[in-house]
Image (cartoon, rainbow, N blue to C red):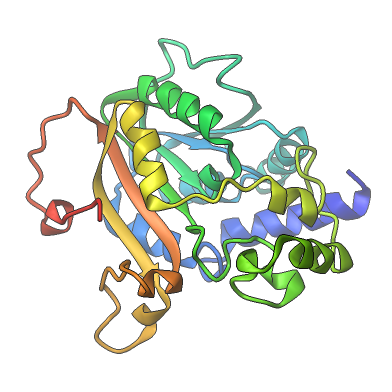
Length: 275
């Protein structure tokens, strides 16, 4: 990681931490504030990246946050930003939970995966969810957010190639476009846009449901954020059916252990979740 990349990473982390209008996390933060009271809770921010959301949780609630990531460059940035702002209720750790599983004393009320699941190959992703299920405290929940593969921005390179839905272009054409506009990114595991694109698993709601079911988890809430939600009267609409699912920019899924009795009264949590 170059000094310039380190500086870029700090700026990115601080924006995600301090700016509630940060474009790719704005909806996440609104929904998390609406759905969760994290006071007094133990939080696992899995795949915490450069720590922006971990620090956001820690400074908006009286909670304890454990941020994990497999990329040492990400953790270096996260720890620097934590120290710079003097935030004490966060711990950052470079850790692969498949090699170093969560211990008996590591149980969490909430596990958050913000824009993480789409970067992990399916067999590994299922094994990770198995470990996360084991790491839940009684009544604990897992909250997953990700851009579904049909999203206009799912390629993670739209900002560079300037073409929404570019993932559906002929592979050779898209490869040349990314290569022409390629940029270095902060990371050891993925260090440029080409690596970031080819590291995607083409995640969809249906594929994620199969993964979490195999891990002993079940969905209790789903929100599909769609471009059409910007229209008057459609702000809370769940628009995720074909062909309008191509306008979904972010999926949000709340999970709990499949053995947990369903006693919720919230009407949102009783909706049909698995179209």
